[in-house]
Image (cartoon, rainbow, N blue to C red; front, side):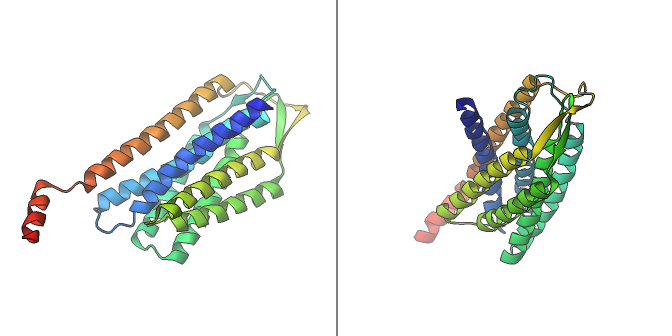
Length: 251
């Protein structure tokens, strides 16, 4: 039981880093003082952070909550890779519209659409495991979880987009990270295996390779957050000419 608690805390940490990176970008992408290129970069990073976090942490949940006792499991990632690219493109398109027209209603609706997509990504990742037994999922409950994640994401995106207060930003990150973690484990709980149906499970990577894959993904997330913070700080530093002008204005 103790190791399961550690797994849950690890997933929550991974989701928190991804959600912090996404909200970091959401806060800044509506700033009209930034160049179009800078805002587009923020949109792309936010989109990648949301989609990648939902998929990769769900893969870890699947390995530790669904297939923990199945040593013959393999994870077939090719479909999720293709879906990830499409999901990032869709999310970027939606968030770019939000960045250009940050109306509260549109922002909440766009966030909900992104959240539903994250639910789909999590569902696909949950079914990526290939075992000697057939996998099945409670579709109704899975869709309810995805809908709940959509609502939570909509609220978080609405709170985080263009936010100026730290408490609001913290609320957006915390809400999204916790709800994403809950959704991932709820999805895992509605996936079952049927040992009476034998299937081929040779394709894909084994759990150890998957663990390395998700650990690297977490590292990239953390590095991306650090790099984006450094870039943002340097972009806000006034130039010497601006300092001179400020001094002259005072006199």
